[in-house]
Image (tube, rainbow, N blue to C red; front, side):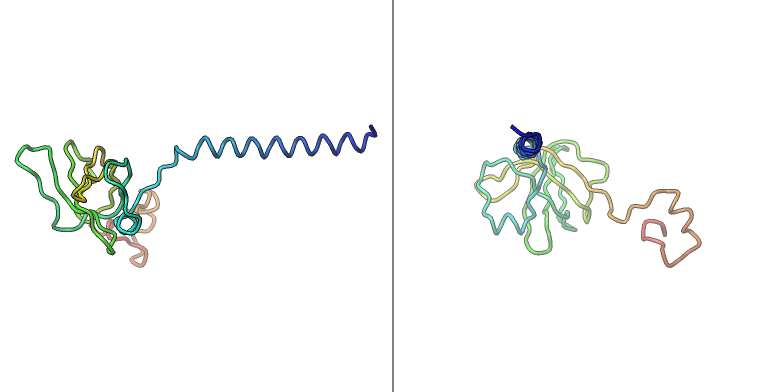
Length: 149
């Protein structure tokens, strides 16, 4: 076999190996991706009751209710297109409140209510590092709502 043919064969084998490694990595990571459904997606895709899913959206203002047991809360997650009632028993994150973003892990029951096992509060999208906020304090054009408090 000529040297030119050996290099070509080696190059083809290397490309096939890299593509194969990439496909294996994507297949392994496919189940590890952390996507969530919005309430609009839930209504459109008709998520099956009992299937483990993540639900994400905003906690609807005026919907948060604490039950008498002290650890169970009821609230509504909305994406301004659809809304889903949620029930959670446990300690909620410090950032969890009405009007804030939330991602909940759990399952839908037969009545369309989402039973959350875990709640993750999403921080404000307008977050700014303290150093940047200090440098902009004199510039009223760039102040965010959180800086005015």
